[in-house]
Image 1 (cartoon, rainbow, N blue to C red):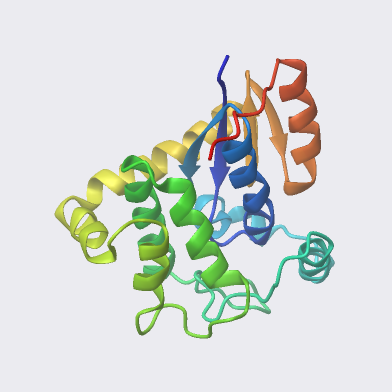
Image 2 (image 1 turned 60 degrees about the vertical axis):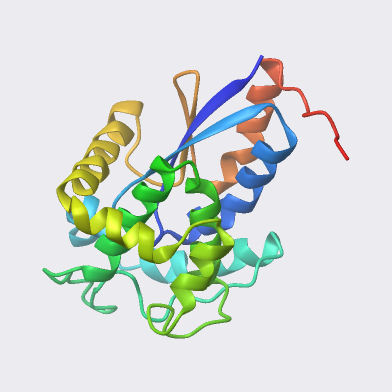
Length: 220
């Protein structure tokens, strides 16, 4: 029996980047379908979180995300530029967020075309693995999109034709995340149970095994 999980995921979340290779492998190797739901970054989805953040939270967050990436053998550097325009000291969030909005819309469009995981995987690597500075310039996004099996010009045209549709889907995904029982990403949902954080992947895998998880047949 094919099992299904829903993954709530954000391009700005380092833990979303750190989790994704395991999710990709899970869907590739096992009889599992992953329904990717792109959400707005927390700065757009829940800006009040930053207003009440403990001063110790951000320094720990920066240390822990780099450590978690190293533990899983992933190259890591915070994106340049940051997809969210936010003061690194005061955490004040700018009114205009063109990069975050663009990424979210493109991610939803890719998911609707059946390439959501591949697009998220390639673009999150572009942002987070440190190989590219100014990921938003030149042909970096075009090449990452091509590696995901899509054409950036076509994807951009879809979004431009009906941006309100993609904004509505993002808002809907934000609401569905809370309806599922959490507020943060990455969150994985299986059979109504939420597994929050990249460090809950093994617990999710255990629960899937309890439900009869099977490997896909080896072909070739």
